[in-house]
Image (tube, rainbow, N blue to C red; front, side, top):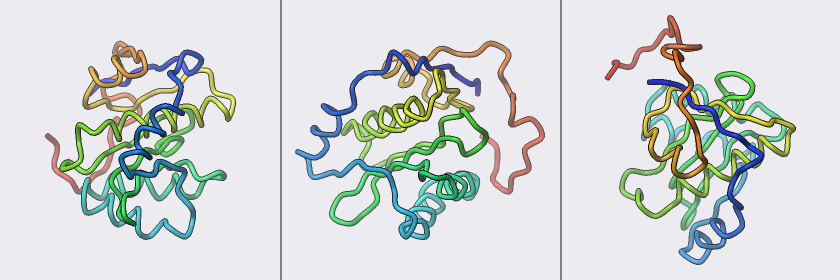
Length: 161
C-alpha cells in the first residue's frame, strides 16, 4: 500500500466535526497518559499487535500524539501521529461496528491539525488502506514509488493481506 502526502495548511476545520460528534454523544480528544493501557489494549484487540506497538510510541510523545473517540467510557476509535517516524500520520482505526458515523473523519482532522500546530507543513500517511477516504477528506495525494517505503523489511508476527 502506498504512502500519501497531506498539505496541513489546507485542512478543513475540526470544530464542526468535533461538535457533530459531541452532539451524537462521542467525545473526540487527545488521549491522556493514564489511559495508555486501556487504549493500547483496545487497539491490540481490535486491530492487532503492530498497530498497538505504534500506539504505545504515540503515548511516549509529549504532548501525547494519539487522539481517541470515546462514548460511554468506551473507546470507539483512535488516531496517532509521529509513531512510525516523525512527520507520519497513523495508524488510525474506528470500531468496525461504528464505521459510517464520521468518527474517523473527526479523528483524522484533529490529529493532522495537531501536527500542523507542532510546526509541520505536510504529513505522510503511511501505508494507506482507504486512499479514497484520505483523498476526499483531506486532499491527500499518493506518493509515487512509496511501496514498501519505510516499511521495507518490517518484522511482523501478523499475516500479510
